[in-house]
Every structure is written in C-alpha cells, then in structure tokens.
Image (cartoon, rainbow, N blue to C red; front, top):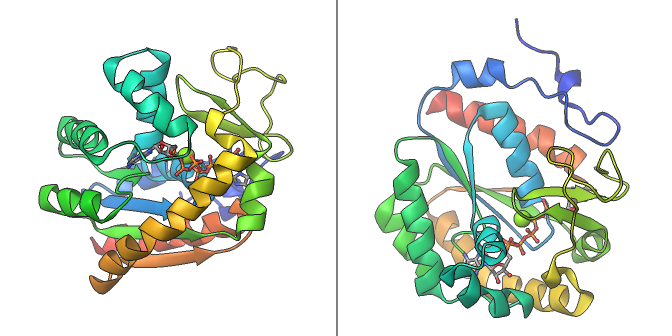
Length: 242
Ligand code: G5P
Ligand code: MG
C-alpha cells in the first residue's frame, strides 16, 4: 500500500519518517539527476531525502573532498586551501575524481551534488553520461547566510545538521556514530560571501546550457519543507516517464 503523504513531512524538524521502500521497489530504471543551488541552498539536505525516498546514490563533490581532507590524502592536501578560501578546487583535480566515482558507481541511479560547477566541468560530464534532469534550488541569499551560521556537520559521513532545523539528538554529536560535529571552515561569513558571488558568476552559464536542452526545473522558496514535496512530485513524474 502506498504510504500517506504525511509520513514524508518533517517530524520534530527531522525527515526520519520517510518510507523509502515503495519508491525503491517501483522505480527500477536508471535515472541521473544533477542538483544545483547556491552554497547552503539545501542541496545536501534535499539529496538526502531523494536517497531515502527513491534509493538513488548521492555523489557529492564537496563531501568527497572533505573526506579526503580528513584522511589527509594527496587529493585532500591539494584541495584544502582552495576550499578554506571559498575558491573552486582546480578543474582537473575535481573532474578526475568525480568521473572516477561516476565510473565506479556504474549502472545505478544517482544524484550529483556540487558537480558540475562550471562550463568546463559540464562539458566533461556531458561527454561521459546522460543527465535526465537538473534540479535547480533557488533560495534567497539572506536565508542562506542565516542558515549556514547554524550548520554543523559530521565530516567523515557528510551528515549535516542545523540548530533549530534538524538538531542532532545529542548536542554536538553525530546521531549515528556519536562522534563530535564540526563547523565547516568555509562557513565563515566572509568565505560564504565569496562562495555566493562565485556561484552567481559560474553557474549562470551552466544553468543556461542545461536550460537549452530542456533539463532544468527550478524550485524557488525559503524552506526545505516547502520545496521538498515539489521536488518529490517532480521526480516521481520524471522517473515514471523514464
Ligand atoms: P560543496 O560542499 O559542494 P556548496 O557550497 O555547493 O558546497 P553547501 O554549502 O554544501 O554547498 P548545500 O549542500 O546546498 O550547501 O546545503 P545543505 O548543507 O543541505 O544546507 C545548508 C544548511 O541549512 C544545513 O545546515 C541544513 O541542515 C540547513 N537547512 C536546510 N534546509 C533548511 C531549512 O529549510 N531551514 C533551516 N533553518 N535550515 C535548513 O563545496 C564546498 C567546496 O568544495 C569545493 C569548492 O571549494 C567549494 O566551495 N568544490 C569544488 N571545487 C571545484 N569544482 C567542484 N565541482 C567542486 N565541488 C566542491
Ligand atoms: Mg552540501
């Protein structure tokens, strides 16, 4: 039986009650989406809901880079200073990493978050795989600036919290591992301002490129709880049509 829509509503600020199995069983076709939006627009949060609801894999360039920084890999060492300064990590590094991950994932449905980030990356991605839809989150900058001040993350997994929106069960600790949460270095107000400016400069052409191919759907709003039901409906329609 189909779960009631109410189960998908946030519970105490969490989306923990989502019932994924109905969708995962029904949607067996391969579907690939890109989620685009300014820093702090909710790409990671909406992607997590897509994972739980549709069973897609979430491939986040930012999460992959941060995990490499924690592990102190060569990639992490190269990426760290760019991320801390709110600049893009050089294309050749990110593109190689993301294409390797996409290849590794193979024949599965996924949502790409944070990649592509400019025209050059979009070109390389389009040569490698076909994207079925682009979800464009359009959130006012004033909302974003307020939000990221309260963001806490569990960097090894990429799990993200926000005080007053989706609080951890125990203050300062990750719900799953109990490990301490941290704040992102690039969430400092001056770095956020730089990231927002860079986003506006670089993503305009990428959105236009996908727009010319009829792939972009924009979701405008101030809160995830109003945006998510629209994204969910959109994806259900798209995935059903194949
Ligand atoms: P990232 O990691 O890709 P950004 O800048 O694209 O980083 P970010 O900051 O991860 O995006 P998001 O994923 O869009 O934001 O947002 P989110 O984390 O889900 O939500 C933000 C906060 O708001 C969270 O705390 C969440 O809980 C809360 N929230 C969500 N909805 C609501 C709501 O309705 N209400 C409230 N109150 N709160 C809410 O990239 C980082 C860096 O990595 C490098 C670059 O240096 C980049 O700056 N990088 C790349 N470099 C080159 N090429 C690429 N392709 C690169 N990808 C990453
Ligand atoms: Mg994110």
